[in-house]
Image (cartoon, rainbow, N blue to C red):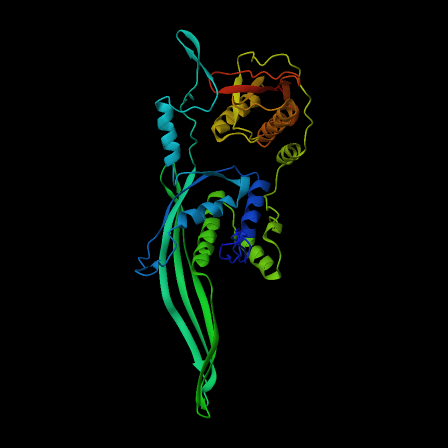
Length: 421
């Protein structure tokens, strides 16, 4: 019990807050590891409405089933970490409001922005908008909770002698969920799942009802326990998410589910789940060599502060989001064009660009640039471009703190060259 002021009534404090876990948490870490180990593409997933379609409602207690199914699905996808990219589509009101402010030139970020106008460069306090900043998704998940079946099975017993004796009762109910994953571009339903989960409970007691002398004693002792209904809904939705992700990644999550449940029974922490070893078809010698060089880290030789300009010809820009070493989804098609030119033994120059509001210390900037170059090198290596062909040819010197802008809203972090074989 706790009270902040002497005249306050004490407040009871129960157990501490902790993560809301289910028995299959480890399966998400396992599947994420499997996706990364097999170098599967990082898909962009969104969530639509996952509603309560059971229609069960009580005037005293409200809805019997949670109305937050979509939020549970979002949380489940969040357990995949960086194996997927999660997009907000469920509640975009703030983003749409700020886009409206941008359109009216009312939204600022506390800084000045330079725009190129017919009269020359102009400094403005509002954030300029350039189309294409909102990234599209590859797939989205929708569906609902479709079943709530009360008391599908119950049983019990009571044994009394002279109105004294024990009693026990068990009961079972069930819920059902139906989910589907849809290709955002074509609206083709890629896969559907229909899952049901039974919810169990029990009640035990001891009754005494009799006279002792001239006094009547009526004593009732007992306990009742029931699996949380809404936690059962979360459990079913999470397993549905795993099945749908397995479909779009062409992986079977059943081994991960079995391992997570086995670890749960053994008392192991979910975070220790390890992805199963990937089963790959027999690789050719060329594929083995490509995989080996992709896995082997290649040291980055620091470039000089010679200048960021490209020489023209086969030149591209690869975008990285704020503070993120991973290549943005927008640049996936650019990577393919770089690979196509490199396959023709052309000299290709690539500018690594990011938002112009990235303003790091020289040490942080150099570290982030190194990570971005390595990720670019890895992305090219898995597509057949040997890492030895990828060289960092320019980056700012450690003493150079200036920002080299590339149009409105972007800056150049480094230049990488892909040389012929």
